[in-house]
Length: 397
Ligand code: APR
Ligand code: PHB
Image 1 (spheres, protein in one colour):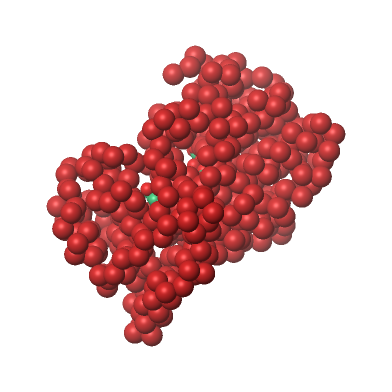
Image 2: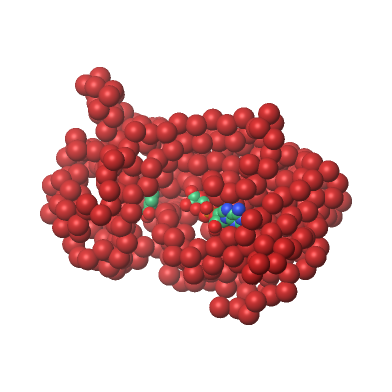
């Protein structure tokens, strides 16, 4: 843990939120000679205790390398050139590399990405203020925006050129934009995911997304010895009602028998329930305030696009800001349109994967046959497989 840093009265880019979006932006800007301050509401330990997804697209891998925060990922991450879709007892392997002209994904947890970004920020002496309370953003549509916040009972004020709202779905940045300027689009799914992390070897060397009569299940991993599994659950479920034994039994019932037969079970390290939602805010810019990552959009986790979409936002925003300070503001002016064009495509893919692979009892027997037809089509068509694979490895930035 680094020593507490004095908080300057002025910076070039003030970043609200010290999750992956805010840290990556801060790191990329600092490496280009642009000064930033990150304000994070929580402690570093709290941020690093959050377990999230773990599949990185090539674009995000490249960005982490450019940020100088990829050394451990390159050493410990697992490169996957395939992924499986299971439908009832059928299984289909998609050869991602073959279907996309050589592209792959990197299996490496978001928690590790965040820890690596903190280490990279510390190594450069980056300013991150933790436990910054009551952050408020002022004059964001004028020429001289500033932020105020409280820390240890004292009020601070920081002036800046620009503000990046990287403070997640529940943050303050999106709420700063006047309601008559913002358009929001939302779809809430009638189920959640119950997830478990356990120090047991993964059931398969590649991820398996499974659609079963009982509902959706996902077999994922963090390493050769740590597995991450999920099953579809009702929103009424309470995590306390799920003993490890009950989870493992339910998971086995959601998987093809040959996969279930190979499951290695053990005590959980973490267990949680997450609701599924699709959400987009437009525009992603208001005056000198720019939204990025979960502050602007949410995808359901089917397809693992959340973190990757945050990374593509940060790519557009960091290059826009860097070009601006070098005298060309085009990228900054077009940030919202460029980011949203990619956001909507990832929203479409995540919605499609979710709709394809979950049980929707309210859609009846016809809905279930459509899902079977979707799987049969996928199995028989290289074009359909190529389309899934192209989206799964990540659309170009
Ligand atoms: N003031 C300061 N910090 C805040 C505030 C606030 N008012 N509100 C939220 N934060 C902090 C949160 O504590 C959190 O650490 O902002 C950070 C936002 O981080 P994330 O929620 O992880 O969002 P982001 O950085 O955009 O990460 C991309 O995509 O789908 C997801 O799981 C994926 O979390 C990942 C996200
Ligand atoms: C995960 O490993 O947590 C994970 C992987 C793929 C997903 C979602 C979550 O689509």
